[in-house]
Image (tube, rainbow, N blue to C red; front, top):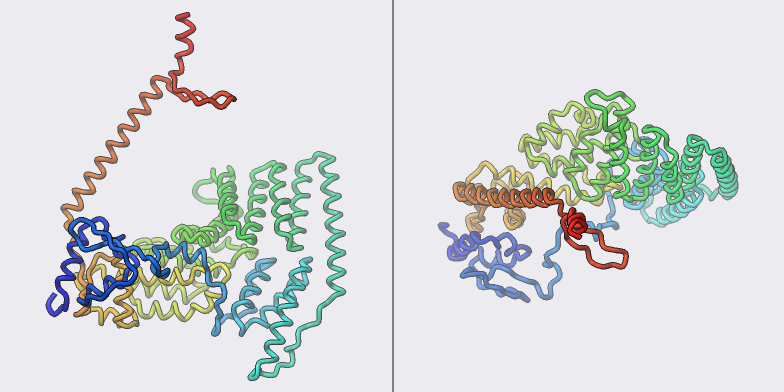
Length: 537
């Protein structure tokens, strides 16, 4: 590289890159790359070196600094989510937003907004308070009223607060609290008595409905664990596939509220395996399509929570717009945002064009969120600066979504990385100054991003840090093809031997005998050995 201060260092990097340990070697060691690219003999603090072959020390293990521990970033974010962030400039129409949901989901989403957005806190709590009074959920009513009183007090103590005639919170309605508690208790006793009578008559349909009614009441009271128990007990009294599906949907709904995502996926699988869903092919009727949409949306939420973004995108893309009526969990706008962002972060260009842009069903969802639609089209058209700018503009609103907020940073990082990869893919070399302009960033910040992508093996390139040029690394396609062919041959041999061994075992009727109750070890014997012994005797 002409003009590079340390050609020997870059050559050394080339030499080391041929080893299989290259990707792991320089992970989480930016000091090493900086010293090599700048040609300095900078001392790397607190590092231990391990020589590999005749190459420069490749593997580095941090001994004292905690910020360079090799931890999976997704796992790290999942274990320590940022729950104390504050959103200052939302552009959310709170009334329209709340009207998209019903039941406990509306209350939970409003509370989440109140917790993270001071600007909308009082309004969100007032709306949640008025809605919770339509339920039997007395505990949540008292909690929201307490939060509203604290928020109002803080607002009044703010020096530059705008005087507002309606700033005083409504007084705690103790009469409503007592009356509601009595009504809830009376209704619970009545439903419990009815269920006992149904069990005495041994009518399965009545018992199933009794469990469902009891679960609905517990859910209305905010007792999610008892609601889940009642809905689950209805399983033993289901007499048709329709009953099983209804039971699964009830359990899924409560499991989402409890954020028990493994339970959600388990019952989605159970519902999809019922004959009414599994045996239908081609055109499905309206009711079946509505059920499938609910199941796919619930599965999408669970996959999103598990950070399996590609699987989540596939689930949301299978939802039907005409049958997306599930306000207890999410709105059609949520499907557009969740599905669009997850697809953008994980799909390649062909998948994005085939499954999102050309999808007649998902286009209808995107019409509800024109900003997400424009972002997807800008990304596909390689207009990355405007795409990333629009993403930043809607970031505050996304951080107020209780299910998407923990994943916004990860999704944005993956989208940006994918944009960088796609930008460079057609080129042999790229000027980093022009590239920084295209991505609306500085050259230094871009160099850090590209370094990380190279270390992770996402871009096969080298950086000329002096000239600020990114060079694609030449790959010997002939050698690569031979290596793949040899690996495939070895895998084929391994599988063929395993199949031959299995066939021989089956042919000779060899099996492992179960150990006796005393706990002795099993014995490997032919299945017909006992008969031979008796014949010889």
